[in-house]
Amino acid sequence: MEQVALGELTVSAQGLGCMGMSQSYGTGDWDESISVIHRALDLGVTFLDTANVYGAGHNEVLVGRAIVGRRDEVQLATKCGIDLTEGGQRRLRGTAAYVRQACADSLRRLGVDHVDLYYLHRPPDDAEIEETVGAMAELVREGKVRHLGLSEVDDAQLRRGYAVHPITAVQSEYSLWTRDPETTVLPAMQELGVGLVPFSPLGRGFLTGTVDPANFGSDDFRANMPRFSGDALSANQAIAEAVKEIADRHGVAPAQVALAWVHGRSAALGVPVVPIPGTKRLKWLEQNVAALDVQLDPDDLATLDGLADRVVGDRY
Image (cartoon, rainbow, N blue to C red; front, side):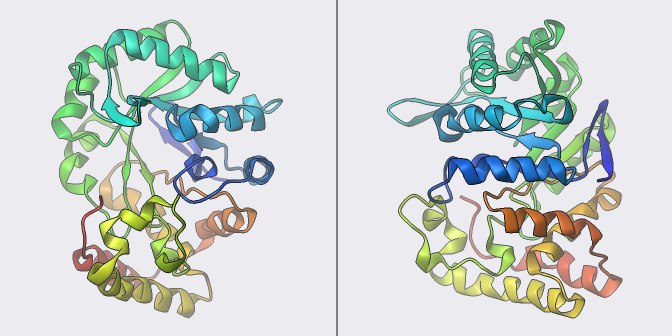
């Protein structure tokens, strides 16, 4: 697979988001998830994304077990900053003491001595971002972390963090129907040479045309998301149909069209773009990887570029 440089970190052109193997999208299967990660590595998808909060640590343990004996093939990314340990209440943390402990816990669960990319999952409520990035920078100096990232930050927050230590990547939701980073953080990314790692590049599955909200279980968090319910869902079906029409013309799956669009955004945005579509199924992994071979023509792009303006409903 083609490689992409995120600053000084070289990763596979497509990564694998591992969150859904442990939470949010219904019941996971340990053995199949391990098989998906192994197959991803075989296909050249070596950029693996997890976080300490996914499955309350379960996901880091899973990813760590999956890469035993293959650590040298992997660019491993994890995160700190979201804490649900107080009765499930969401706290956004970033004190130096918290960062040090969170990293130590992640390394233990993953079973590794360092991670290649360590993100702050969200801007903290209990510290200035300079303190948080400063603590993360200390982890770099200690060899526990190779590169730093920030997730879901705006222009000012990225600049403040970067002033403390170079930031390799910003991870944010980005897809045909969510293009917020273009207006919230892109100017700083361009100026500083920071890459974009889009999560949910398939619109949390909606853009695949295979999602039926009526079948969401009680453990599928999309059931409570505005875009997947009521009048918004009905209106947004037109977006999925537009993607499907293009896919049908090319003889590919809608998911591949949606991913191909994201892969092609690097030139338009002026920064490296490496999406991390998530899946816990082998067939979807292989389909996603094949999106790298899909070529969209100017007419396709003209249609796809306008879809975000038609979205009904907030992200959360």
